[in-house]
Length: 297
Ligand code: ARG
Image (cartoon, rainbow, N blue to C red; front, side):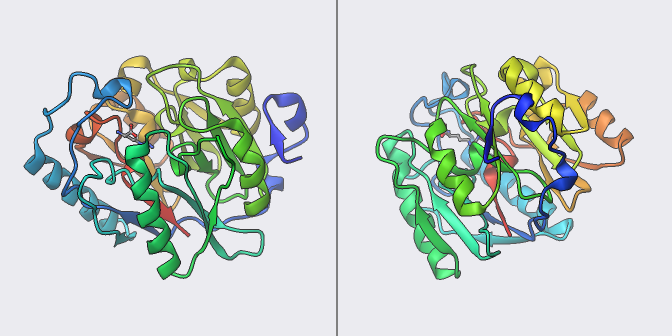
Protein backbone atom coordinates (compact mmCIF):
# COMPACT_ATOMS: atom_id res chain seq x y z
CA UNK A 1 0.00 0.00 0.00
CA UNK A 2 1.79 3.12 -1.18
CA UNK A 3 -0.89 5.73 -0.58
CA UNK A 4 -3.68 6.41 1.79
CA UNK A 5 -5.99 9.33 2.26
CA UNK A 6 -8.41 7.83 4.74
CA UNK A 7 -8.27 5.17 7.45
CA UNK A 8 -9.98 2.17 5.78
CA UNK A 9 -6.77 1.52 3.89
CA UNK A 10 -4.69 1.79 7.02
CA UNK A 11 -6.91 -0.24 9.31
CA UNK A 12 -4.45 -3.08 9.40
CA UNK A 13 -1.36 -0.90 9.36
CA UNK A 14 0.49 -0.08 12.52
CA UNK A 15 3.55 2.12 12.92
CA UNK A 16 5.36 -0.81 14.51
CA UNK A 17 5.02 -2.86 11.30
CA UNK A 18 6.87 -0.30 9.20
CA UNK A 19 10.56 -0.58 8.42
CA UNK A 20 12.85 1.46 10.65
CA UNK A 21 14.60 4.68 9.62
CA UNK A 22 17.42 6.29 11.58
CA UNK A 23 16.68 9.59 13.31
CA UNK A 24 18.39 12.67 11.82
CA UNK A 25 22.03 13.03 12.89
CA UNK A 26 22.56 16.59 11.68
CA UNK A 27 20.81 19.55 10.11
CA UNK A 28 21.54 21.87 7.23
CA UNK A 29 20.97 25.56 7.88
CA UNK A 30 21.48 28.81 5.96
CA UNK A 31 22.49 32.08 7.64
CA UNK A 32 19.94 34.89 7.21
CA UNK A 33 22.46 37.37 5.72
CA UNK A 34 19.98 38.34 2.99
CA UNK A 35 16.77 37.50 4.89
CA UNK A 36 13.89 39.95 4.51
CA UNK A 37 10.18 40.14 3.74
CA UNK A 38 9.90 41.66 0.26
CA UNK A 39 6.61 40.19 -0.95
CA UNK A 40 3.59 38.26 0.35
CA UNK A 41 3.85 34.51 -0.28
CA UNK A 42 1.70 33.53 2.68
CA UNK A 43 -0.68 35.35 5.08
CA UNK A 44 1.99 35.77 7.77
CA UNK A 45 3.92 38.05 5.40
CA UNK A 46 1.09 40.55 4.83
CA UNK A 47 1.93 43.89 6.49
CA UNK A 48 5.49 42.77 7.25
CA UNK A 49 7.22 44.28 4.23
CA UNK A 50 10.34 46.08 5.42
CA UNK A 51 9.50 45.29 9.06
CA UNK A 52 12.16 42.67 9.77
CA UNK A 53 14.77 43.63 12.36
CA UNK A 54 17.79 42.24 10.50
CA UNK A 55 20.37 42.30 13.36
CA UNK A 56 17.79 40.66 15.64
CA UNK A 57 17.09 38.00 13.00
CA UNK A 58 20.80 37.21 12.86
CA UNK A 59 20.98 36.89 16.64
CA UNK A 60 17.89 34.64 16.77
CA UNK A 61 19.33 32.40 14.05
CA UNK A 62 22.70 32.15 15.85
CA UNK A 63 20.96 31.34 19.13
CA UNK A 64 19.01 28.58 17.37
CA UNK A 65 22.19 27.03 15.95
CA UNK A 66 23.71 27.02 19.45
CA UNK A 67 20.64 25.30 20.90
CA UNK A 68 20.78 22.59 18.22
CA UNK A 69 24.49 22.02 18.90
CA UNK A 70 23.80 21.89 22.63
CA UNK A 71 21.49 18.88 22.11
CA UNK A 72 24.18 17.06 20.14
CA UNK A 73 23.07 17.87 16.60
CA UNK A 74 25.72 18.78 14.06
CA UNK A 75 24.86 21.99 12.18
CA UNK A 76 26.08 22.10 8.59
CA UNK A 77 25.81 25.29 6.55
CA UNK A 78 24.93 26.20 2.99
CA UNK A 79 26.17 29.67 1.95
CA UNK A 80 23.35 32.23 1.56
CA UNK A 81 22.71 33.80 -1.83
CA UNK A 82 21.97 37.49 -2.42
CA UNK A 83 18.38 38.04 -3.64
CA UNK A 84 17.29 34.77 -2.00
CA UNK A 85 15.59 36.38 0.97
CA UNK A 86 13.79 33.14 1.96
CA UNK A 87 16.82 30.85 1.79
CA UNK A 88 17.00 30.69 5.59
CA UNK A 89 14.00 28.33 5.29
CA UNK A 90 16.17 25.35 4.44
CA UNK A 91 13.29 22.87 4.73
CA UNK A 92 11.78 23.88 1.39
CA UNK A 93 14.18 23.50 -1.57
CA UNK A 94 14.64 19.74 -1.26
CA UNK A 95 13.40 16.61 0.51
CA UNK A 96 16.20 14.49 1.98
CA UNK A 97 16.22 10.92 3.19
CA UNK A 98 17.50 7.42 2.64
CA UNK A 99 16.31 5.59 -0.44
CA UNK A 100 15.18 1.96 -0.50
CA UNK A 101 18.80 0.81 -0.47
CA UNK A 102 19.66 3.13 2.41
CA UNK A 103 21.63 5.50 0.20
CA UNK A 104 21.42 9.21 0.93
CA UNK A 105 19.12 10.87 -1.58
CA UNK A 106 17.44 14.22 -2.12
CA UNK A 107 14.54 15.13 -4.36
CA UNK A 108 14.60 18.67 -5.72
CA UNK A 109 11.62 20.94 -5.17
CA UNK A 110 9.60 22.81 -7.79
CA UNK A 111 8.85 25.96 -5.85
CA UNK A 112 5.53 27.72 -6.18
CA UNK A 113 7.26 31.13 -6.36
CA UNK A 114 9.89 31.52 -9.08
CA UNK A 115 11.94 33.82 -6.84
CA UNK A 116 12.73 30.80 -4.62
CA UNK A 117 13.81 28.48 -7.45
CA UNK A 118 17.52 29.60 -7.32
CA UNK A 119 17.61 28.12 -3.79
CA UNK A 120 16.88 24.73 -5.32
CA UNK A 121 19.83 25.03 -7.70
CA UNK A 122 22.14 25.94 -4.81
CA UNK A 123 20.88 23.03 -2.71
CA UNK A 124 21.31 20.60 -5.61
CA UNK A 125 24.98 21.60 -5.87
CA UNK A 126 25.53 21.39 -2.11
CA UNK A 127 24.00 17.92 -1.82
CA UNK A 128 25.83 16.64 -4.89
CA UNK A 129 29.07 17.83 -3.31
CA UNK A 130 28.19 15.98 -0.11
CA UNK A 131 27.66 12.57 -1.67
CA UNK A 132 23.88 12.53 -2.03
CA UNK A 133 22.03 11.15 -5.02
CA UNK A 134 20.21 14.23 -6.35
CA UNK A 135 16.93 13.52 -8.13
CA UNK A 136 14.78 16.13 -9.92
CA UNK A 137 11.10 15.59 -9.19
CA UNK A 138 10.55 15.94 -12.94
CA UNK A 139 6.77 16.28 -12.94
CA UNK A 140 6.02 19.17 -15.34
CA UNK A 141 3.37 21.53 -14.08
CA UNK A 142 3.48 20.12 -10.55
CA UNK A 143 4.68 21.84 -7.40
CA UNK A 144 6.76 20.44 -4.57
CA UNK A 145 8.18 22.29 -1.56
CA UNK A 146 10.34 19.61 0.00
CA UNK A 147 10.34 19.08 3.74
CA UNK A 148 7.84 21.87 4.25
CA UNK A 149 5.17 19.45 3.03
CA UNK A 150 6.79 15.98 3.04
CA UNK A 151 7.58 14.87 6.58
CA UNK A 152 9.32 11.67 7.65
CA UNK A 153 7.61 9.82 10.45
CA UNK A 154 10.33 9.75 13.16
CA UNK A 155 12.17 6.45 13.17
CA UNK A 156 10.00 4.75 10.53
CA UNK A 157 9.93 4.42 6.76
CA UNK A 158 6.71 6.40 6.37
CA UNK A 159 6.14 9.84 4.86
CA UNK A 160 3.31 12.27 5.61
CA UNK A 161 2.54 14.22 2.44
CA UNK A 162 0.85 17.60 2.68
CA UNK A 163 -0.62 19.12 -0.47
CA UNK A 164 -2.83 21.96 -1.67
CA UNK A 165 -0.87 25.21 -1.65
CA UNK A 166 2.80 24.60 -2.37
CA UNK A 167 2.83 20.93 -3.32
CA UNK A 168 0.76 18.93 -5.81
CA UNK A 169 -0.68 15.64 -4.64
CA UNK A 170 0.57 13.90 -7.83
CA UNK A 171 4.26 14.12 -6.91
CA UNK A 172 3.93 11.73 -3.96
CA UNK A 173 3.82 8.65 -6.19
CA UNK A 174 7.42 9.35 -7.18
CA UNK A 175 8.45 10.26 -3.62
CA UNK A 176 7.01 6.97 -2.40
CA UNK A 177 8.93 5.00 -5.05
CA UNK A 178 12.27 6.75 -4.53
CA UNK A 179 12.20 6.40 -0.76
CA UNK A 180 10.45 3.03 -0.68
CA UNK A 181 7.97 4.39 1.84
CA UNK A 182 4.19 4.59 1.99
CA UNK A 183 2.90 8.17 1.85
CA UNK A 184 -0.05 9.31 3.94
CA UNK A 185 -1.67 12.16 2.04
CA UNK A 186 -2.99 15.15 3.97
CA UNK A 187 -4.87 17.94 2.26
CA UNK A 188 -4.26 21.46 3.58
CA UNK A 189 -7.54 23.35 3.11
CA UNK A 190 -6.78 26.62 4.95
CA UNK A 191 -4.81 29.66 3.91
CA UNK A 192 -2.71 30.20 7.04
CA UNK A 193 -1.48 26.61 7.36
CA UNK A 194 -0.01 26.44 3.89
CA UNK A 195 2.77 23.92 4.55
CA UNK A 196 2.22 20.68 6.45
CA UNK A 197 4.95 21.65 8.93
CA UNK A 198 2.77 24.56 10.10
CA UNK A 199 0.05 22.25 11.45
CA UNK A 200 1.65 18.84 12.07
CA UNK A 201 4.73 18.34 14.24
CA UNK A 202 5.97 14.76 14.41
CA UNK A 203 7.98 14.43 17.60
CA UNK A 204 8.73 10.75 18.05
CA UNK A 205 7.38 7.47 16.77
CA UNK A 206 4.23 7.77 18.87
CA UNK A 207 3.67 11.47 19.38
CA UNK A 208 2.54 14.35 17.19
CA UNK A 209 1.40 17.94 17.64
CA UNK A 210 -1.60 18.74 15.46
CA UNK A 211 -3.81 21.75 14.79
CA UNK A 212 -6.99 19.97 13.61
CA UNK A 213 -8.78 22.92 11.92
CA UNK A 214 -5.91 23.10 9.41
CA UNK A 215 -6.57 19.54 8.21
CA UNK A 216 -9.60 17.76 6.81
CA UNK A 217 -11.73 15.27 8.74
CA UNK A 218 -10.27 12.45 6.63
CA UNK A 219 -6.76 13.72 7.34
CA UNK A 220 -7.38 13.81 11.09
CA UNK A 221 -8.82 10.28 10.95
CA UNK A 222 -5.68 9.13 9.19
CA UNK A 223 -3.41 10.78 11.76
CA UNK A 224 -5.38 9.33 14.67
CA UNK A 225 -5.45 5.87 13.10
CA UNK A 226 -1.65 5.71 13.01
CA UNK A 227 -0.30 7.92 15.78
CA UNK A 228 -1.11 6.78 19.33
CA UNK A 229 -0.55 10.14 21.06
CA UNK A 230 -2.00 13.10 19.16
CA UNK A 231 -1.59 16.36 21.07
CA UNK A 232 -4.05 19.00 19.89
CA UNK A 233 -2.77 22.55 19.71
CA UNK A 234 -5.20 25.44 20.17
CA UNK A 235 -5.70 28.28 17.68
CA UNK A 236 -3.71 30.83 19.66
CA UNK A 237 -0.61 28.68 20.13
CA UNK A 238 -0.83 27.30 16.58
CA UNK A 239 -0.85 30.77 15.01
CA UNK A 240 0.91 33.15 17.43
CA UNK A 241 3.72 30.75 18.36
CA UNK A 242 3.58 28.41 15.33
CA UNK A 243 3.63 25.65 17.95
CA UNK A 244 3.37 22.78 15.44
CA UNK A 245 6.48 24.07 13.66
CA UNK A 246 8.66 22.76 16.50
CA UNK A 247 11.53 20.43 15.69
CA UNK A 248 12.30 17.23 17.58
CA UNK A 249 15.71 15.67 18.04
CA UNK A 250 16.75 12.24 19.29
CA UNK A 251 13.12 11.44 20.19
CA UNK A 252 13.57 13.52 23.32
CA UNK A 253 14.29 17.21 22.74
CA UNK A 254 11.70 19.56 21.29
CA UNK A 255 12.96 22.96 20.14
CA UNK A 256 10.07 25.39 19.75
CA UNK A 257 9.13 29.02 19.57
CA UNK A 258 8.38 30.50 22.99
CA UNK A 259 4.80 31.49 23.80
CA UNK A 260 3.08 28.10 23.73
CA UNK A 261 2.85 27.23 27.44
CA UNK A 262 -0.05 24.79 27.08
CA UNK A 263 1.75 22.70 24.48
CA UNK A 264 4.95 22.96 26.51
CA UNK A 265 3.24 21.59 29.62
CA UNK A 266 1.70 18.65 27.74
CA UNK A 267 5.08 17.78 26.23
CA UNK A 268 6.90 17.94 29.55
CA UNK A 269 4.23 15.72 31.12
CA UNK A 270 5.06 13.17 28.43
CA UNK A 271 8.75 13.32 29.22
CA UNK A 272 10.01 15.59 26.44
CA UNK A 273 12.71 18.12 27.16
CA UNK A 274 11.33 21.37 25.72
CA UNK A 275 13.75 24.13 24.77
CA UNK A 276 12.19 27.46 23.85
CA UNK A 277 13.77 29.84 21.39
CA UNK A 278 12.75 33.17 19.85
CA UNK A 279 12.07 33.27 16.10
CA UNK A 280 9.86 36.39 15.95
CA UNK A 281 11.63 37.84 12.90
CA UNK A 282 11.24 34.62 10.90
CA UNK A 283 7.58 34.20 11.84
CA UNK A 284 7.01 37.52 10.03
CA UNK A 285 7.86 35.49 6.91
CA UNK A 286 5.69 32.53 7.92
CA UNK A 287 8.27 30.14 9.34
CA UNK A 288 9.81 29.08 12.63
CA UNK A 289 12.14 26.40 13.97
CA UNK A 290 11.14 23.39 11.87
CA UNK A 291 11.49 25.10 8.52
CA UNK A 292 14.75 26.87 9.40
CA UNK A 293 16.62 23.59 9.04
CA UNK A 294 16.75 20.49 6.90
CA UNK A 295 17.12 17.19 8.73
CA UNK A 296 20.11 15.20 7.44
CA UNK A 297 20.24 11.42 7.71
N1 ARG B 1 8.38 33.04 3.37
C1 ARG B 1 8.54 31.64 3.10
C2 ARG B 1 7.57 31.21 2.02
O1 ARG B 1 6.45 31.64 2.05
C3 ARG B 1 8.34 30.86 4.37
C4 ARG B 1 8.55 29.40 4.21
C5 ARG B 1 8.36 28.65 5.49
N2 ARG B 1 8.61 27.28 5.32
C6 ARG B 1 7.92 26.25 5.85
N3 ARG B 1 8.32 25.05 5.60
N4 ARG B 1 6.86 26.43 6.59
O2 ARG B 1 7.91 30.47 1.13
